[in-house]
Image (tube, rainbow, N blue to C red; front, top):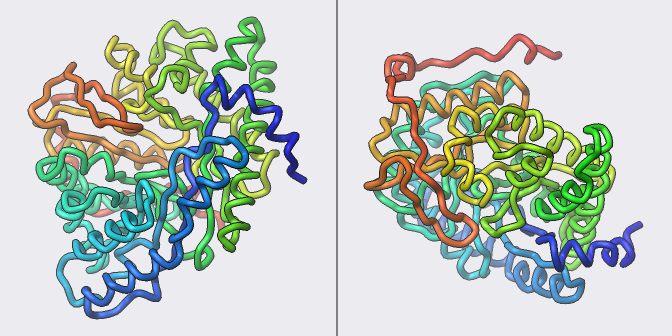
Length: 448
């Protein structure tokens, strides 16, 4: 049973160590908005979101005030729009993205996710319409986030979709400075992720529900910093106990929000999500374990310890752990990652290796704007392969930076932070990507 004593013990974490609830995300089913006329579908989408989420922001603010727990973002996720628009008579789904944006603005949320398609087994006509609409949709909206799932352990990797997404990312970068920061390509995407840009409301979820994402890199950093001599097994225990306390806060907020909004509680995502603020960095946690700079030899092992301990401690604190739940390594959103990348210690190849043991993958990476679409597709394919073989979620959020070269800094503002433009390999992957088809699922996918 949760009580106020669970919160009192976290006062110092909130005041001094950047503990916060990163997001309350309301998931909303939009399948009943489907229809042939896209304008009518757009109207139904707007009306339903506004009705369901009209009190989301106020509820979050009330809980924040009453319990003294910072709640950074209030967000909405919806059914993948490629499903909602499947019978629409239009060739492109931009009007549906505009309806999402207007509804999000009317509700006062930070972002809305779900302009999405799930194509890990192949592409439908509706999927193709959505994917081709992404560049224009993200340029025409401010709050809409988009995601495409191109692979899974059960189905393999759809390399035709991978090729398409490399081209879509390039076009999105041409049309919008911020569009690519709101676009993520997944393998093994989950249905209950509350974090943007990859949130969508899966078809296996409630009609509507509340998902909460907690975060506390600064708390974990402080715990490790205070025990510089501990061997790794004892260090892991320290992280587990800290993750337990962090997750209890998220569990309480999730239960309270669900109760006040009269919706089922979905999940608590216990990911360590960094921000550009000093003291709120996953990279600094790894360095506190004894690494001179994040990215040097030993970084992957340190991240594995962190990720596993966070999951173990958090899973004991909540009966509904879900989403991604681990450690995020977004370069632009983590001041320690930015410093390591600027120093040259943290490279794209090292980040790819770290993906094997962290929560998601290559996140908020800026690359030169002359990077070919085939190279971006190959980067996506590499990440998808890691996810497929290791039966975990992986993702790519990559930004071709306009008129920028390696070493330049790109400012995205706010929580999105500042990213150094990182080099990619110059050798071509175009022939590889042009093969198309599907990479078969691994043998260990045959579990039945």
